[in-house]
Length: 69
Image (cartoon, rainbow, N blue to C red; front, side, top):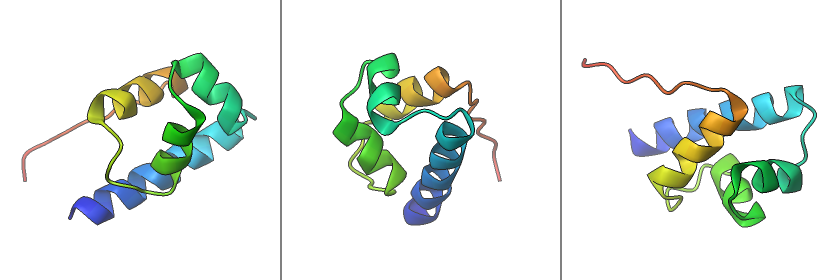
């Protein structure tokens, strides 16, 4: 399940960044994270800290909604 979530999250982040015509470098600058964080997030790496994921999502204007199954 973790890989499915990170894969989906990676696709959403990459697509939204591209829609906004932002480079990985510029998004990193706006979010206050490293460019490597953006690359790792877009590759679906599970090692990206949730606090950084949250910051990037906020910068892109993406809400993460959790619900019980």
